[in-house]
Amino acid sequence: MHLSTRGHYGLLAMFDLAEHYGSGPIPLKTVAERQNISDNYLEQLIAVLRKAGLVRSVRGAQGGYILAREPGSITVGDIIRAMEGPIAPVDCVSEVEPAECDQADSCITRLVWTRVRDKLAEVMDSISLADMLRDAENLSIAKKV
Amino acid sequence: MHLSTRGHYGLLAMFDLAEHYGSGPIPLKTVAERQNISDNYLEQLIAVLRKAGLVRSVRGAQGGYILAREPGSITVGDIIRAMEGPIAPVDCVSEVEPAECDQADSCITRLVWTRVRDKLAEVMDSISLADMLRDAENLSIAKKV
DNA sequence: TTAATTCCGAGTTAATTAGTGCGGATTAAA
DNA sequence: TTTAATCCGCACTAATTAACTCGGAATTAA
Image (cartoon, rainbow over all chains, first blue to last red; front, side, top):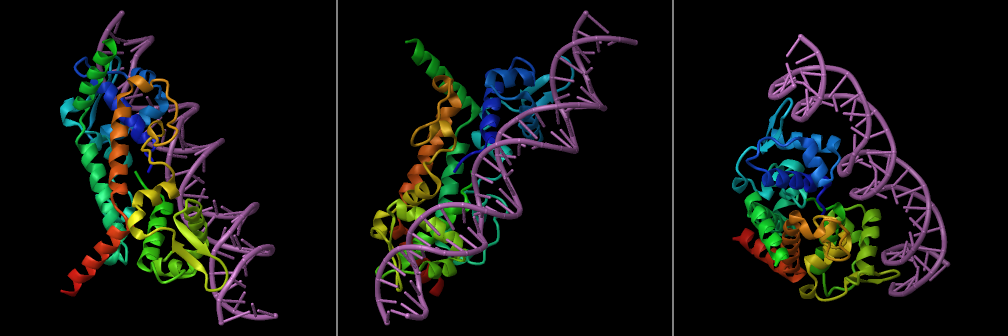
């Protein structure tokens, strides 16, 4: 049950953009440095997020990336689905185009994986970037006290 | 967020043993055939389950495998942890020995992965093999009607 | 003893992951 | 108009992991 670095880095990058939402486009290099990701690699990953409609790009000098929507309307689930594909502990219960399986209607493990999938989706869809910003603020307040 | 076939097959095999719990040892070959898994491969997997204390083996002719405990006291979580290691969407929030991370105390994505991990563990630990047997029964009753 | 079966360790193949690297297109600012 | 910053897209590779395969030794019931 491991995420690849794609999902992991994807969320880091999106959270970074959320933290600077409203300050114009952020260059990829800046995000990469702050989040400690190879910028060559992040370039690849952010292309996926762009194609999924989660970020907008501004080309040319002084360009960079911006969240395509406000942080409150982008969830962890959106990001993970973009980076890793549909949520599916096993292929036969994928959110989209579940893999064929001849014993599908008598397979009990299928029920299990469906429940796992749904819980996974539920928790990821319930956390938005705005929620994360709030958590970050609480955390920094807590530290100061 | 994919399980490997190890976890998938592991649960299939354990459920198969649960369905025949009480009828003495079941040969590996029988399980492999019923569940449509290469017996060479399943041999490897069941060794892991045995070492984790989830199944007992009986060697020699008429031997085979038996659940080490009753189906009600073995959960999906037990099986998945045995087959795939500790539950951890990313290494820094592993159930055991979380990986080091220099930004650990300011990392917000960490909070997210912790919540994901906990939900995952919660749902897997809440389903026992006995629950699955009950589901199987309900399913077959529903079909007859 | 023979046949059935687990047990063990090593070897193999294919796919995936996690990047690297580079040339080019686009745009803003000097 | 030139230059520098930046995105864009593709090709490549090295390392790791997944998913098996194989052969043979040990054990036990019939």
